Length: 264
Image 1 (tube, helix red, strand yellow):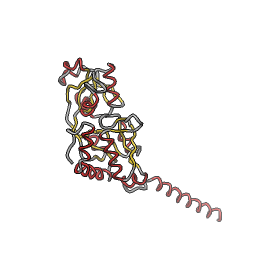
Image 2 (tube, helix red, strand yellow):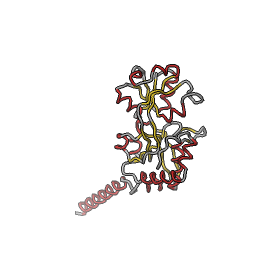
Image 3 (cartoon, one colour):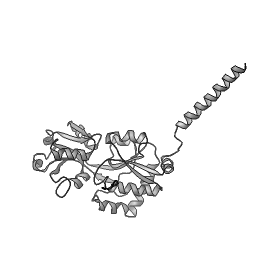
Image 4 (cartoon, rainbow, N blue to C red):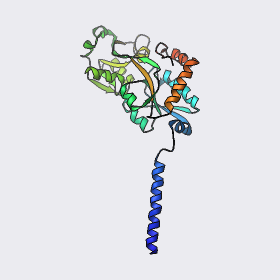
């Protein structure tokens, strides 16, 4: 009898321990804001994308998005940490809490809106075709670019535009990598954001031998958080305040994107 009672008691203890472990496995936070403030940092998923997010040469990141993210983190009372991600994995990184938001000139496509909680739009943009300057006159419309060999950042808005046109491409890890391939001649063309094109190609830039021709669309940028995140509303409030006090316009002027900023 005593052995039986001991077994029952042991089973009860084990059941309680399993219940405890299961509960501990669940999130202990009621909100993303609480989670971020408790750990003391906002982890921002980015790629190398001038003028939005790019290395400062000293191990840090600068750019319009990077500087706005720093200011937002400060408003929450936390530090900011930038993590360079593979763009195609952005939703997985977000859901797995490898990052807390995607803030990298992200186009507000239907796919993005369905997968994330997205902020208000803050910048206008377009997807443009980039080729070498000495052949640009041959590729001035959609039909003419169909013969080109494209390289495009995987999972990007540019990739979606080519897919919609039925044009095949090779995937790259970033828009910066795609530009390097076109400049080196390993691909004929790429599709990148207009804001990046303005900062990185043409005379006096990193790629003076490249130019853009066809504009494939018009679009808006937003920031992505986890579904149901209360940080989305916090960012919208921050955007409104930063626009009202001129911070957003000042940073936009610094990085040459002032004509693209959307009033908040």
